[in-house]
Amino acid sequence: MDDTYADDRAEPARSAASTIALAAIGLADVSSRRIAGIAGFGVRAVAVVGGPVWRSPPAAPVRRASSSALERLVEDGARHERLWSAETRVAVTERVVDAVVGAAIRYALVERVVGQLVAAGTLERVVAQLIAAGTLERVAGQVTESPLPLRVVDDMLSERVTDPIVTRVVESPDLDRVVERVLASPAVDGVITKVLDSPSTDRIVTQVLASPGLERLIVTVMESRLVADLTDHVVHSVELQRVVSAVSQSPELRSAIAESSASLAGEVADQVRAKTVVADDRAERVARRLLRRKPVPRMGPPEPPSPAGAPG
Amino acid sequence: MTRGASPPPYAGFATRAVGLVVDIVIIDVVTVVGAAIASLVLSTIIPGDVSLDLPAALAAGAVWLISVGGYFVLFWSLVGRTPGMRLMRLEVRAADGGDVSFARALLRFVGLVVAAIPFGLGFLLTLVDDRRQGLQDKIGGTVVLYVAGRVRGVVAAAVPDPTAARHEAAGPAGEVIEGTVVPPGARPA
Image (cartoon, each protein chain N blue to C red):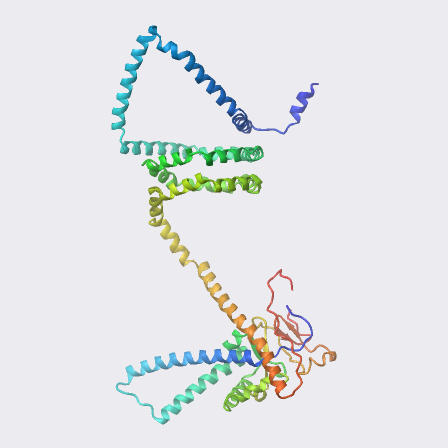
């Protein structure tokens, strides 16, 4: 019997999804520099070999034909760019978002994917591996140091397409259901706990918070029209007014306010009482000394009952 | 919870005085508001100026005295404490440890008036008495105790010998359970 196969069998069973996810992460983590190197070499090789060939006299007809084709493409692009107005873009984006969200909801896509990931424990293992390998930390460092996020956010905020996408997604009636289901999963709990307990999380958070890039990003987002629009939308929404009305009329809130008021009055009374009890004894001592009477040993007032479980 | 044989915690002059001041404020507020409402109602029924002659003033004074007396007597005899005493967590009990009866409460109110007449000198007796009894307590046969929390519906309070603190060897005379003086053998279930 081959020992290698025996070792393979001894490993814990791993689902196909988790194997693929781990392989993808491993590949991205290990060979990113190698891929970049190969790509750079390819570009250089094309530039060195292709340049003289392209400029040679035999290639002139091809060069002319391709330049005229390119010019036509550029003209077409410019014409389409004018036709491709903001309204058209918004309408198309809305349709695309509707189609994507509709398909995701119709086929319970998100739920199924998350369910698979959760059931196979992939999510948990992936997060553990990301934390252990320090990948998250490196990515966070690169992201915060790079101007790319700022540019991306800037572009997104300057486009009028972001509003409808956000609105569509937020107003989707099934979003609540999906989020609820994901949050109710014990595996997600475990992942969150693991992430929060990890020392890497501390380092990442510190690193991200200390970066000037994040500050610029937050300022850009906060100053954008999107935040103001979203805030207006939320403030004027019927749902928020209903929530505020329900909260203000809730008997629990009222009893909590009454209780806190009563406890404040009780605390004031306790303070006054503590002082008067001391004054009781002092006044009595003075009076008895004046009348040359023997002082009486006193027991102080009984302590209030301590809460259940408290010592004493 | 405080548990064990010990002398009862008699309430002293300052705490009782604050409780009495709170009661007086409550009485005054109720009286002023009540008088305002009454005068408003009367002004709508009786047109013109209403002058207060001597019999009417005496009647009003009698009503006021009865109201104040009713306030104290009813609170002492029904719940063993007025709102002011409740705020300061005090309790009035008969000197023998029993509840304050209506008659005893009435007698105590008379004692309160008597103690107040010589510029409150009757109250100062609290400072020198072994059981911190004022003149109203001597007349009514009552004592005032500190309590820790809310008065519970337990069988309460045989108040022991006034000199119990000096004669603890004579044996336990009562226990303080959650702020209420409970006689031996009468612990709450």
